[in-house]
Image (cartoon, rainbow, N blue to C red):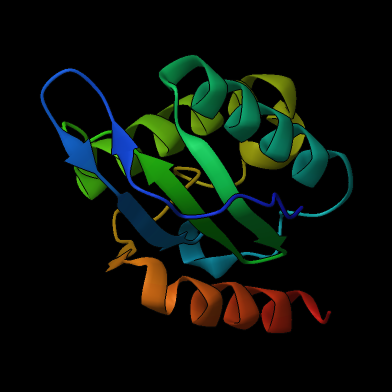
Length: 136
């Protein structure tokens, strides 16, 4: 999935901001479970949660054993908050909807994640990297 969005500063009542994160996280034990219907449902959950929170997905690449997310968020949201929200909601729904597969794992996601901030200058580089991971 790739969404196109120009990275311009947003303005609201009291601030001007451009907060963009490149986030990566993996299933527990790096198991390659993010395929087929699980991948599709995971993408749907991520898109719904981001829409609900007012976050913009710039690029999303779900690989069998990890997720790359390039996302634009509000200044009040830390990378840790974003990852916590997304890992939590996807784990809840995936464990409930795909119980026979997911019960073999003690938890859906590892506790770790990668987070990097990005500005307009490096945004294109990150999108190329994610696309390369997808094989585009």
